[in-house]
Image (cartoon, rainbow, N blue to C red):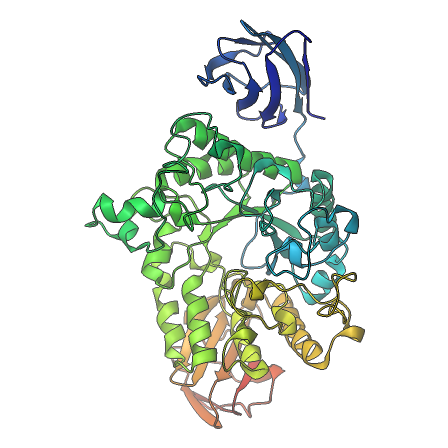
Length: 607
């Protein structure tokens, strides 16, 4: 245990909990939030005379004490925190550990990676003994038994598929009957018992790193759950925006935050409203709250050797907080990367929250937002018959991002209906969508189950258990999708397609980090090239690979003639099919001719 508490029997003063439960030597100075009883009027002191308190703030009701240390020790040590006051005495030990070596994590992710989203409770049950209370796999909003060990046990499946980076939903303690998802924290420094333990998280991280893979953890600095102890007993009066009895409803229109002419009236309920009118909104303008949340992120990063953070509800928190948050985290972990949820289809809005953008105020420091505009465009094109130009209109707005190559495009996540759950969805259209997703710029993100064409409507139907991950459950998990021998024919067909695309991506640097040049886009056809220095055309030096992607989303054969002068294909003479149906491709002196079958794709190497 990082902390242990003692008190004399006749005393009424108690030390119940310290956040964070431990810290590290040679780390930024911490603020310790002490939860206790009868702390009012007390004096705190530390056993190490070289460590002293910069200031101490105690809540009027004596339940909370904020201990601001002047520094962390240079070397690991265990100290004693002593409290002495009118209500008695108590002590607690506190540990400053040795930091992780940099080689054990903190690597960050990039466009060379492929991210796979796992909702922990719905992926695999690796330890049925932790299923505990509120476990009922028959109820879509109850806990279903998925845990951290279940993920670790199926890393072979992910690695063989071609995944390099695993994003897991929050592991915070969520002591509520329907908080299986992890977004309603009741303790931000504890792994929920349903998911396992902190050691299980560390084991998952270690196993991933041994395989050369990466771990991204979901973090939620915007809010906590309604059952958190703070809701009825806050350390400070303005710990939240509003209170349980009197608060605003969060609104999800981010446009006012990007409008220099918008009044505070239209912006207030984005950053200060309670999400879904239920989740208490933390007040990051309070310096203690800001410190608590920033060092909470550091604690999880250091404990688990995280490579990145996925940040929930990003626009709902002020830009000033994000600037400070990222400055501190990037100073400590310069390679670690962050990706933020900005759930909006307008690139002029989404780009406003990317790091390096100051047109709407201070720089947030965010490494990248998720590419929601591309998500909506891909859905419109391949599910609703929109023109291919809908997608290129979004790509054109890449100019709004300082680093469009960092964007994270995707076809779906745990907050959207499954692609195969949408009206009119077919496996053919999903294949085409995957072909674009896994060959376009940025780092693609897959939602667990999409690679086997899982169906599912809106929440909670989009969060069905992964087939084969829950052997004790009945019905939906009768066949296992982790093994090709037990996949259904449709599951195997999609899995094979996705694995083939990821293998192609892994073997072609042009598809990982190359530039992208659109050569043709109309109602049904999209053709683009990936590679370096595309403006110079083909070069016969073997160093400038050109990969051509051609997609026909229509019901008729398309014969396409591309003018290649002053394009990425200039001076190219040969085309080799890598994936898809042979499109009868042929170079002439100043053009490239290819024929695409209906609802078909071709990926080619050109030289």
